[in-house]
Structure formats: C-alpha cells, structure tokens
Length: 276
Image (cartoon, rainbow, N blue to C red; front, side, top):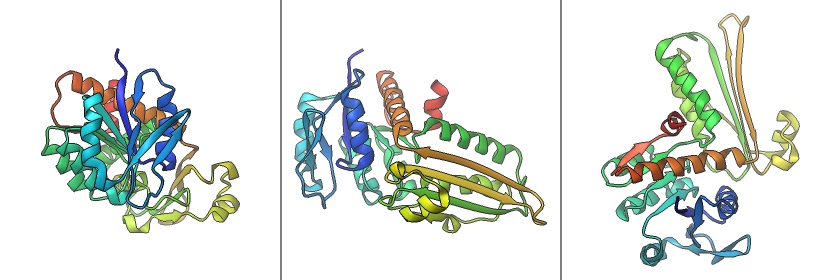
C-alpha cells in the first residue's frame, strides 16, 4: 500500500501538532510539509521532528495548494483549526476537491454538511474522534430511539471540562443534549456547564496538572423528580492520543472510499466504527 499523502491543517495548534508528530513516524502516511493556519499566526514554519512544516496563511492558500498538488495529486486533509474557520475551510477543500477529516468543532454544522453534500468531495465530519466515546454516543442514540421519554421529569446536568485554550463548547456535549432530550430530559445546549479555569479543574475536579493543557472530562447527571434516584455517566480523557487513533482510522476509511470511486458524501465516526 502506498503511503497516503496527509496534509494536517491547524499547526501550530496542540492537536494538529500532536497529529503531525505521530503521522511523521507512521509508515501509512506521507506527511506533507505544509499546513493551513490562521491569519493571526506570525510564525512561518513549525518543526516536526527534523522537518520544517510551512505555515500557509489564508491569503496564500490557493496558490500554495496548486504547488502542493503537483507533488501530491491525491491527498487527504485533516482539519484541527479554529471554530471560526470551519465553514471557510470546508468550502476551500470542496472547491479544490480535497477529501478531508474535519475534527474541528463549532461553525455552522448544517452549512458544513451541505457544503460537502453539494460537492464531489467526500469527508468524515465528527465532533469527537475518540472511537470509544463515539461508541458510547451510539449506545445513547440507540436508547434515545428505542426508549423515548425514559428519563422524563428527571433533572439533567451536563458538565464539560477542557483545556483553557478550547474556544467553544464541546461538540460531544452538544450531541449528547439531543439524545437526552429524546429520552425526556428538558435541557438546552446553553445549559451546559463549561469549565476552562485550570485552578478549578485541578482543585475541584481533580485533573492531574500534567493534563490541564490537554484533557476532556464530561459528566452527565440525571436526578429523579423526588431526588431519590441518580444516574451518572462519565468519560474522562487525559491527553490526546485517543483522538489521534480515531483520526487516523478516519483517514484510512476515507482513503478506502476514494479507492472505491466515492464522489462526495458525508461520513461520521459511526461509519468508521462499523467498518471495524
């Protein structure tokens, strides 16, 4: 199998940097020495092992991608940029027929899906790339479909804690709201409790100091109307390795679809999981 040409966009961000480090050591991939970055970035390169990755500003990306395609005609992009860039980046990928894995949360998600569906470009779009958490969400989706109003009348609390630099509310937490609504809990996405203060994360939640800069802790608590019954679901992720495994699986899934002649289409991490 030829290595997949991989363009990891979002450097020098933490998740993109971690993925680039791992991809550079993975024989399944050929890491492209260029990364789309934000207009606010002032550095021009990012070091990955003994390599220098050029950081491409939005104003320069069209010319840059034309040069990149000369050496890497078939490439797949991974996007871990910023919520404000989601829709613009998706339009760019589709206009240039670059299949992509969108791990960035935020943006207008309906527009994002529509952009891909109205193009010949295929993509895996998921608010969470951790396969085990996605599997948990699938279980919740099954319960929501088959046991509507199971928790009618229960009071729901959703608390999510991520590194201080995370700009938006967790996409996973937002998705869980929909499931709990179908299960009968009266709850809005605006009710999600976001924790970004490192001191609170350390002192109240117990996040280890080494993971304050990279973690995802979620707790969903349901309490019965008479306060006699409590259900609590928790998934705590320290570090980012779990996201790398899922992201690379998504890339391999997408590459397989392209090899089969896939033109256009939006896939989720559930589709990736079903393939095994």
